[in-house]
Image (cartoon, rainbow, N blue to C red; front, top):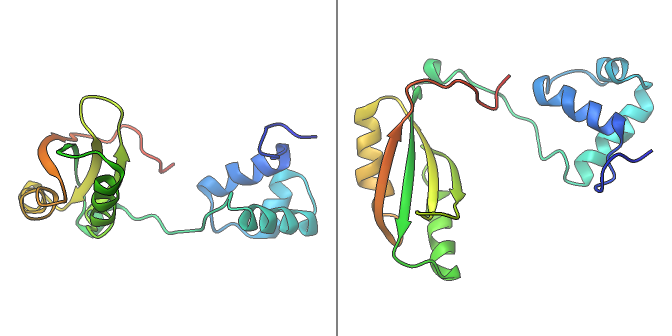
Length: 154
């Protein structure tokens, strides 16, 4: 029984739901939680990985404990938004580890960046030395996060 246009049924959805919060769960425990035996759960997991639904597994860190508790969102305006300029900007952004997320935006600016650093002084340095010198950047506007009310971490 299919539940969506991508071919994911309720068992696939259950697997994804569990893995989104418990990526290190054993296949045996995953199977128990979703109500299937181990072999079909393993086969489904392998199919989800092979089809690119599951892109990978990673560890999540407490930003405060690794010196990255300061979060700023940066609106970026570019002087050129043709495909070559966007590609150059995208490639350069990928080289800056402090930029945690980068989104092309439809609106009053071109990109929205989520930047994570240790403190405001570190952020100012990243903004001045790295972000402002990205290809085609003409203006930036910073919004500093005071508190994360909800993030992608459970």
